[in-house]
Image (tube, rainbow, N blue to C red; front, side, top):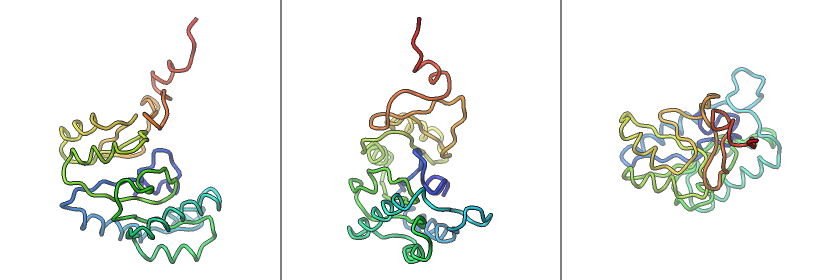
Length: 202
């Protein structure tokens, strides 16, 4: 949940693509949709609120555009009730949704949405998962979730991104270099690499 709902999904390292193994996909997506439906969207100053507004109405409209186009292209939008609920709030609010059933080349899987939208796609093998994860022009961060640490490390080393979390998301201690690969930029912030990537030697 934290991966795509933290700060309403307005995080450059937000986990907006979810790859789920075929054998558990139906059950996992059902459980996740139930959890998403339970989230409270509203006043960020209310302690019971899980998600507040997006930065402005323009961005909220952009996010809703991704959702509407995905629905038009045949995706299942889960939970279905969140589409109707969004109309009861101010224009800057967008309820979190899962987008299920589209191919990996669809824009919701390829673009940085910057909103509470999680695209779900299934895979049959670790090799396919890596190919799907790498099948984009961007490469800032990935996360690998498994009980098999050897498998996690093997997959992590195959991912073409600047950062890879294992059984975690969004953690970024100061000692850890932060930065992407490919379309997600170059160079590093923080850590020893961050202190040497910008200065000029004399």
